[in-house]
Image (tube, rainbow, N blue to C red):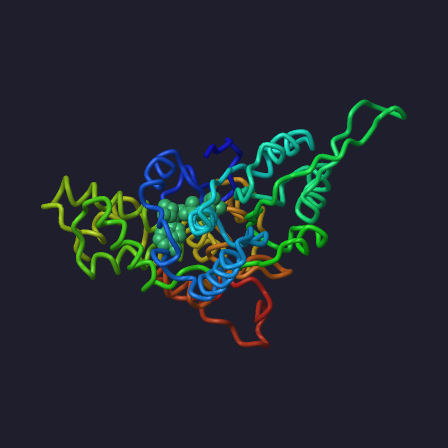
Length: 362
Ligand SMILES: Nc1ncnc2c1ncn2[C@@H]1O[C@H](COP(=O)(O)OP(=O)(O)OP(=O)(O)O)[C@@H](O)[C@H]1O
């Protein structure tokens, strides 16, 4: 198995404790923490059941499994599931990513070296180049590619037969895929964010594998701050373990987890310094909005893109911030979470009544 390097997503994962994309330490530790079969894979019960049927049927036919598309946010287990698919089929796996395939020739080289039944995992499949994508259509459907030899009018297409293989494509949003590509997958699985109880199971399992002592309340405390994402749960567990070793006797309890994550500035809902900075500016400086994205970004001292792509998606998902045509607004839950009192709305007839930014609301 080999994995080619590719640029990450844009959620600031590498620099943030609560970012969902993998950093260097994650990559090193994750191999040891990955569930090896479907039974070990926590949560996603619908996806697991459906995939189990697809794989059992393929095994019973003695054939290769249909192509599988996995869609979902980073860190929810797409790579892990692709490895499980290969393991359940008793097949080897090759791992690459859309951005690593810039030319159709790159893809032809990979496809022509696949062995029968091999699983090809293509992460970030929506970021593949157009010519490569078109080559993939034929490879998926007919297990054949046309290799173009020569240039201009003298160019000839030489057909190359491929052994049957299973493509597992992963994307953060299935909607980004062109329909002809999407339609060539026999099975599409939508991965959801995990419930806190499921993340507790992930944490207990990882703690066992890492030889870390944790009680039920300690696991619940970390799970509640993990933003529905196993990768973040595993990362927070490692940081809390450090704290428990250095400042306590090694056992992770609710109290120790809370103290450790306070040091790392991850609050009880999983918001970090950046998220809280955005909410704080929106509430204190702009009375809860509406305020334009650029103004908000300047107030926080961050780039527009950082606020929009790194902080906002989770704040919106949590129902703390809303994007409206008039600008960003804080919800009542945001005031409550930040421990602040919203300004009282002036009566509708008064100047600066409802509809006006609440900056000077009394
Ligand atoms: N259902 C699960 N049960 C237990 N652990 C899980 C589960 N899903 C993911 N993990 C753990 O979370 C980590 C990240 O998972 P994985 O690399 O598969 O995510 P991903 O969706 O492929 O992320 P990316 O899109 O960034 O590649 C791994 O260490 C894996 O062990």
